[in-house]
Image 1: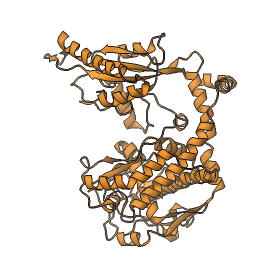
Image 2 (image 1 turned 45 degrees about the horizontal axis):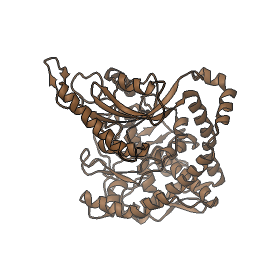
Image 3 (image 1 turned 90 degrees about the vertical axis):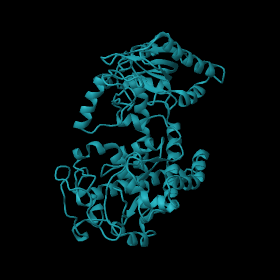
Image 4 (image 1 turned 180 degrees about the vertical axis):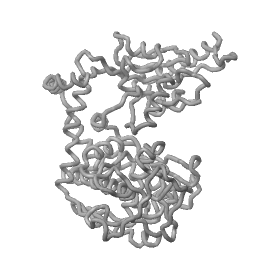
Length: 511
């Protein structure tokens, strides 16, 4: 069996995951709730994070684009993912773009919008339960000035390639072409399915069927799923491009780190294509984004994003409030926060890093209970001490601890983010010894030590704590300021979209 939270392998009947420390009964309840209704991404302590707080989260430099391979799980598909900081900006866009709700974080997965390479056809297994089939309207039946202009935007390979340089939209002197639109469109499809595929039917979506033949109820007006994702794509382009234009007007130059990502992207994509047995990047792009998408289109997409992110990060950094401002803000709204259960004596958030060393060996009885010998526990402790000593004999900083966690930790839930768990509370459902360590009232930033739990030894590092009320007020102040960025940019740089010239290409998502 696997942990419901971090997917680590567990022994049958295990009550607590040794990796993330969460009780599986609680996980089962959470799983049931997730199947009943869509839920937002959750924090490590499994507490829901309001979207406004997510938008105001600490801005982190996005890592270089990486390829998330789905080739083994879904043969023939390779999904490209833009990581880390993309999420911050995309969440902000989703919050503030007016009109059709859309704009998800840019991760890719497998979905379906099927068409043959020569003519549109329906593919997949028919489903009467997941979605209501609907005939696409002809262009004359839709509004030429919005996404319903065409009942279907799907076209043949030759048609889409011929229209690749056709300008679809303009904004502040910048243009979006049919070829570039393919990147934005499939990004939205893949991301939605990445987040919600397990209960897509809740939304009335059958992702094995053509998107232009299914009704979508998420928009303000009746439309198909293809139209919905198309509007999400255009909204995303307008939002990213609007922020990029603001940065350009402010005289900002792209962050050197971001520029480095762009400079290395062609080589990275070429290597990626070779790794997956593809002839070149053209084949890689076609497999992910259709026949009109090129490497230049993808690089342009990333350039617009990074430019917008540079401006967003610059404004964010300039809006960080002082302690006095946070105190005053909370005091002014203290009764409102109290109604939400946030008070000055409401506890703290704790941030902790750890490196997990799992105990090895053990003897399992007929009831499935595993016990470990003193020698096995000592071997585990000795290995943990060696790792701790390695850190102490080095720079012994939080950054060096994080690097060691990524290298040494057996916690699959945190060994790619430096062993970090944030916003832990006294109610977080972690194993007791782990929780008791960070809840110690004498604990100070920089403290470290070894903690034994029933699953092994944890090398601990205390990053710090913050009063819950303080963090709530701080997040709300920043959110109020940065959430106005996109609407201001959209008002300042109105976009003109010619829906009649849009064509969307075929991507074989079921291959």
